[in-house]
Image (cartoon, rainbow, N blue to C red; front, side, top):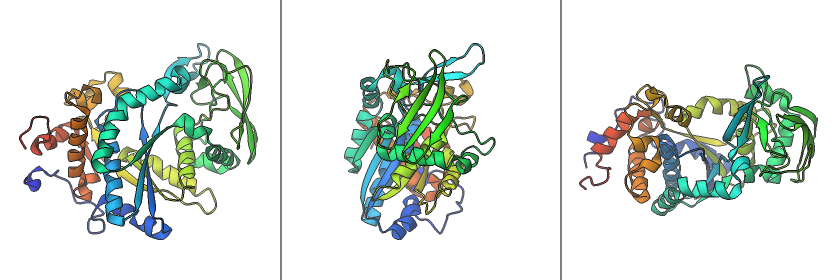
Length: 383
């Protein structure tokens, strides 16, 4: 195969001459830490079938993990966090316009969440794992936030909030915290009426307001024990479920990951670069902070230049989907088997990883289609 003919046309990268493979970005951290194990962390959305951009990021994580194992001689584990805290239902207060949300976990329950994970990612991840030899784990946010180490990080963040809030929300200093109502599972999206009553290393109390059930107090304890005033839990809701904004939540996850006896490597799409800058600055609010290593993956763009987005796809914004094949917007529309889909993604991402300059850029869906055809990756293409 003439790889020069099918390679992406990419500009010279600022890392040219310094980085030969994108996984080399973690080498200095690996040398400094002396770890013999690497844990890569990536996300799993369950609020609909994944689009191509999500699949590229996840496939990149498997290939980067395999390359790290082969190149650095370390054990690797790939850990996916399933975002069952994403909004499933939304409402607005008719009087104030305050937005309330109920998460997939609270609306659907744990069994249905596991079904969604298996439906969207079970076969795909199994195929990627079998081909790359990289083991993987999937844990929901509900499981993560229930662990004592996560709760301790949440409690410590409350004691440092005077500094953290201007890093996590530099325009206004308001960091959303919204523990869901213990009776129905609904929570204010922005936590407008959430108030931290007490905060310490072992215990905190937060007052919040439910649209249907009024005020309640959620208690968070470091040992995982908790309680809530305002009624008994019903409808799949949980007492002292830690609900917080995206950046705050990711800070807590990454702080927990840094506790592990392994080099923590966070894998995200390149659209996260600006947010990760704030996360890194938030880490510096802690004494002797150890920041995670980061690897950014290519973003898949529509013809308009906007990245593929579930919200825009669901809204029917044609400028966000023009020129995209159906399976690029919904992996469930792939016409072949899940194993064939996995092999196509592996072939595509290998092209992107062939040089750092090809990995440090975005790709329109039209360019992705061209690469797939040029490389003979489609189903039924001649070998």
